[in-house]
Image (cartoon, rainbow, N blue to C red):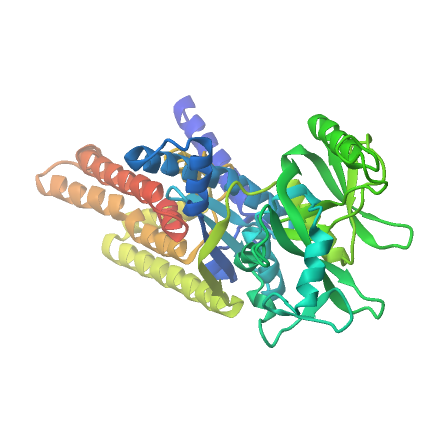
Length: 493
């Protein structure tokens, strides 16, 4: 064996070991897509109306095509930021192997394989939450305006008064719990129609343990936002009640100290009162608490306390750590695949692979005899090397996907991906067929065996090269323009 052949065999052996290592053990290394494993897929879209509002706040002189161009640019930037925020939130939920990637200029696809109904609902809530944290003062006229509401018996839709009490309880007969979405809380701010203040409800517990809602009017001016936040974590108080502990960054600590000093009793902006102002802590337009400022706070720490469960506190911590979305997102498509359907798809795909492989092996062996057996052997090697090929193709094609970068692992296996593998089995022996038929033609011209083999390989090369180049270009275009299952097919192709 000469040195050239030895290096070829060493390279083949190394690639074979590498390829097998990529899929061993199979159940841990190979990630299945939604159509095979079951799960949920969300497609979310950035709220362009909110983006437009943000653009005009930055530059109110924009109009016409200049405004539309700015909205498109801002939508894409908001999508990119939202992509990372959503990825952090999904990771915080502990969902294994999620797929999250951009689509067009303002959409994001989130694929969550193997999630149950509870985890799906939790993920949906987490994805849609803007998680915008605000610190705002309770309006100086809040108590007076609240008394006016109760004196005339007014209650917001979905809530009702309790006789002789200044709080509300839920009225599910008028509005179901699932209707209390982001749009509802946005509209609720206008209840009562007070200029310069938003109406909000603080969730609390009555002495008997029932859930109640205390109304308050909150000044529209922001004193502090979530951008000043350094960290959020779950903690427990002296009686083991969970709460959210907040730590501000340097700028936030200075601002928080200034606000609490100014509105503490006899503070710079509260000179005539022996009682401090109430500072409302708001998350996603929902009032979490409104404690009274007793003294200036210089520690750079704050907390969100209330009648929260452990899960509610952990959810808030997850949102705050991940950061706020730059603009609201709306779920425009939701698709759920039952795990049993995925199991059927896997069985059907494997059956197709086996039958396709057997058909190719039998045909090549029967038609080309010894040469066919050699082609079948090369097909077996191709199947062994297929994981390495998919790994390499995923990384290579990732370079042609805007914003995705190259992959460093096996791609997710989907049903179209299995179809691509079946197609690969048929295409794999195409080169052998071209070479063998060319060898037959050369032998028919009277050439010897070795001369015919040499000529067959040489003259079939251009056709094989052209075919594979066309396939590669097709795969690149499919991967570049497609998403999800289409990309899976492009990789196996």
